[in-house]
Image (cartoon, rainbow, N blue to C red):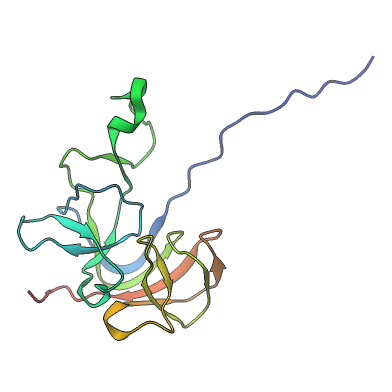
Amino acid sequence: MQGFTPAFSRPSRKRKGLVKLFGGISAPWYFTTEVVAEGTPMVLDLVTPDKMNVATTTQGASVAGLALQETYDEAAFGQLKGYHFANDTRQRLDGNPIGLLMGAGWAATLNYTGAVSYGKQASVAASGKLKDGTSDGASSKLPVWFEGSGTNGDTLVRIRFDFPVATRV
C-alpha cells in the first residue's frame, strides 16, 4: 500500500503590523478615509476634527503618530461586500475610528521598507511605510528610531518613538 499525503492548504496566519510594547498613548478617536496599514505614519487633518491623513515624504516633522489599525475599502471585495472578518482588527472605511499611537514609548512593527538597522532614525518612504532615513533631510525624519534590524517587513522590528502629544498648528 502506498502512502498518501494530501496538500495542506491552510491560509497563513494574520500577523499584526504594529504591536504596542511599552509606553505611548493609544488615542482611539482618530479616523481616516484612506486605506492604510497598521503602523503607517499619519498627520492630523487641520480642516476636519479627529481626521488623520497618510504622511508624505516631506511631512516627517508633522507626523502625530502611527495608525493603530489597518483599513480597507469594502468596494474592492465585490461579492464579499459586507463580509465579517472574525478575529481580525481591520476596519472598513466607514468613518469609525482606528486610533493613533502617540507619545513616547516602544513598539514593534512590520510596516517598513528596505533594510533597517539598530540606532537608525526613520523617515517616511514614498509607499507610506517607515524606512532608514539616514540620508534624508530633517523635514522628512520621524521621531522614531529602529532598535532592531530587518528587510522589507519580513520580521517584527522594535522601534522607539517620541511623538509630540501637543501638536503645533
